[in-house]
Every structure is written in C-alpha cells, then in structure tokens.
Amino acid sequence: MEFDGVKEKTLVLVKPDAIQRGLIGEIVGRFEKKGLKLVGIKMMALDDEILTKHYSHLTDKPFFPSLANFMKSSPVIAMAWEGLEVVNAVRLLCGITKARTAEAGSIRGDLAMSVSCNVVHASDTVENAQNEVKRFFDEEELHNYNKSEYEHVYAEDER
Ligand code: UDP
Ligand code: MG
Image (cartoon, rainbow, N blue to C red):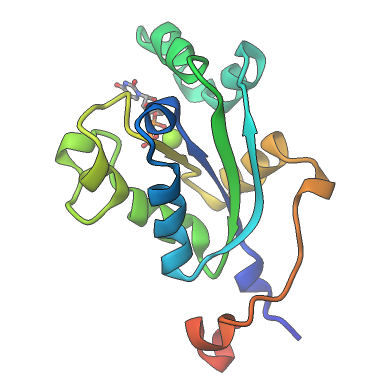
C-alpha cells in the first residue's frame, strides 16, 4: 500500500515570460529531475475570472491590473506535481518572488530577474495547493499511475 504522504499535490504554472523565452522544457526538467511525479499538464489561456480567484490575495494591490495583463499575454502551462511534502519542496525549487535576489540554483534564481516576470507560480501552502489544483484541473485530468523510479527516489518507509 502506498503511503498517503506521497500523494500530496501542488500546482505549478509556467508563466507567459517563460513561454516566450523558451523555458518550458528547462522548468519541467527541474521538477522531473527532483523525482516528482507529474499527474496533470495542459496549456491554457487564463481569463480575469480565474486570475481574480488565483490572485485573490493581491486584487487590491496597485500592480494587480498589470499582473493580470501579464498573465493573459500568452497561454500558460498548468501542471500538477505529486510527491512527499511536495508543496514545500516545489517552493524551495522555485525560489523567492523577487527573482533577482532568489537563491542561485533555484528556478527563479537561475532563470529570471524580475519581481513580476518570475517564470513560475507554485502553491504556497498545502491548503492552497488543494484548492489551486482543483481550480485548474478537472478530476479526470489528474492521473494516477505508478512511477517505477519511486523505488530509488524514496526509502521504503517514505513511499
Ligand atoms: N507580483 C508582482 N509584484 C509584486 C509582488 C508580486 O508583480 O510586488 C506578482 C509576481 O508575478 C508574483 C505574483 O504576483 O509571482 C504572486 O505574488 P505572491 O506574493 O503570491 O508571490 P509568489 O507566491 O508567486 O512567490
Ligand atoms: Mg503566491
């Protein structure tokens, strides 16, 4: 029987700046190499309705209109990644919001310079991740499958 912890999911968006800069493969590769399981992926155009919910903590900020325009400037890649404590692990991989001060080695630290154009979104808490995965993916778009590398990614008592 699989341990419930490895079923934790998080939402990642590859943002329009990364789409324009040809960084989809690079970003997906970072999560793959970490040993995470991709359980959902699609390209989608975001509208004001989903952005207002997704960025509900920011709608009263002066930069919200330009953030919304940026997020609508091209489609994004939405992904659901699964793994043990994956929400925290993915936030660490992404680095802090202001990309030019994000730690070298992180996705933002290596690939971006801006506070706004910072190449990725990642859910920040387990509770938000559950809501965000549901917001971006229908149930039938999330896949359940065995990943043989788990035998090498996790110790027996972790998977
Ligand atoms: N953002 C911005 N200006 C700011 C703060 C945030 O344009 O001063 C944008 C940026 O794209 C960021 C997103 O709004 O990634 C969401 O902000 P949040 O504080 O949730 O940062 P994150 O969780 O993405 O690191
Ligand atoms: Mg956030």
